[in-house]
Length: 606
Image (cartoon, rainbow, N blue to C red):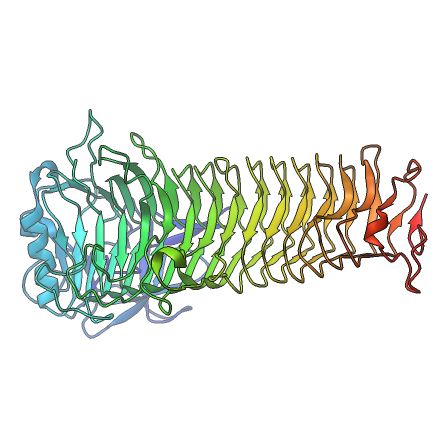
């Protein structure tokens, strides 16, 4: 029975509360999870008897043979609990050829010297694994395997490359998860059960001094695939395209990977938007060989990854996103982007374009050239159809400065309004624009975010239906902290506003906006202002503290009609005459529940 160098054969140890790989650790094997009998009749990869094995410098369990007819054992690395380890084949520990399921590429002739073209040798190992119905292709660590063209990684193949480098030495990318002659694949009928573990995969983009690749190429190309895992993979120095071009693929997981370095080698700057990970549809121009049947990418998890510069090239255009669509009824669905670090992308960090049912959570996004996170879709006037983003949850993210755009941004169109968008519990700081900006969306929720030091507003909703802006903490906005412009039926409730150069809460136009239960202090403009022909604004139960700065407490201009200003607390601020409640005669705002208009009515002012 052959063990080791499998999908999950890595020793882990807790260090300071974080799980990490334990190198150079002795491992014994037992017949029970606790106590039990130790297996001592083992054989190492060199054929010598042994009673234990030692993990390598990367924490990987080396190849070894276990007792006959024992398909699984409990591994003990000296920790509190043991881990279950399973045999990978019923043959005896060989590496390459025959029916073995582990194939060492050096046994097929790969040199790994960084100069020799190892394409044929590695492909031979991959082909043998595929022909055998699946298996492990092993790239020993500490070597650089040069390849002049794309490898083809097919169904049932696991590539283990921890500590190894695969480097483009021609003018091509690195790997395709399909064959060149597969031109009739549809849906998700292509290659599946593919696993790629570890390694540095270097596209080697030319930068004028270093690198050989000048063509616009992807590192990994996918088409009509399903059930694919990338884990602990580093993709480096991409030339003009994508690290992973995920087209028409389902059930893809990208976990703990790094995406470092990008060069736009188009010459005209036309690739500066390229995503490190692109979620695409099977359409003409997508670059795949299968059918252009409009199949979307779906059921995708991208977790715990890093996106940024390499040691010689800058960051990608975008970290994760899409920029194509198919029709009114097809989306990239069930996408989860969780716990990633995104630094300095040329444009957006995450671009949810024509997505449905997505979770964008707990990411750190800083220094992007445009929005940190954006939700949008095709313009119906250009596309000729209406595709609406739906059910997008953006929560727990930390978003820093975003190149003059909003760190979190939702953009719809008059006839294509995103729905079910929730922006909850994010931290937004230092925006050169509005912190959270939502335009032409239906019932967006913007709640419990912390937003500070934005050049413009902290939160701004424009042309939306029933936006709910609640429980946010807004500090020191350059403009009005919270704005609702030409919205219908919106709510600003329970927010805290401190400081700022504009109004605390601004209602401009629209109708039936309620502003209730907010606490506003120290703004340079009005605490709450309703203007620009807003109809029936309801301003109730707010606390307004002048703080020596605020010009007006509650300001309802003459163009705002049918308003209600009741039960607000403006006490303790020593307002100059006529500044606590500034209600224009044309506004006819009601100030007590009995319908009276004499101020302060049922508002508390001092």
